[in-house]
Image (cartoon, rainbow, N blue to C red; front, side):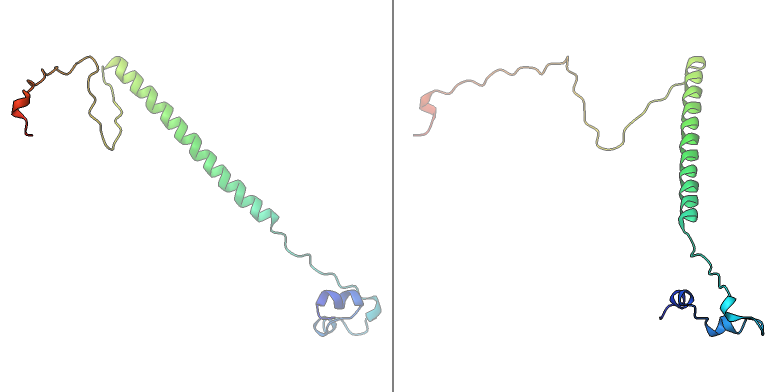
Length: 118
């Protein structure tokens, strides 16, 4: 019997508990109540709830701000003629107009066989 739990179940009273019993008490009728081990389920669930709630609040705020900005741009562009454009950063490719054709070059004159080296 090494652990205190085993000692309590076997009916042994540790000396630190035995000293706290008032004199004249029948030791056979003493009941020792142990404190339950701490459960971490509550604090973990509370932390997850707070984290998910904060993320949800931030997503809702971002969505509302986007809606407000889009409606402001729509109102301003309709009333004042103000507009905006979105540009992507990075490498920009030059777009060739598809309606424009390249000028065709005439073929160079064909050399006679006498001009070639043998």
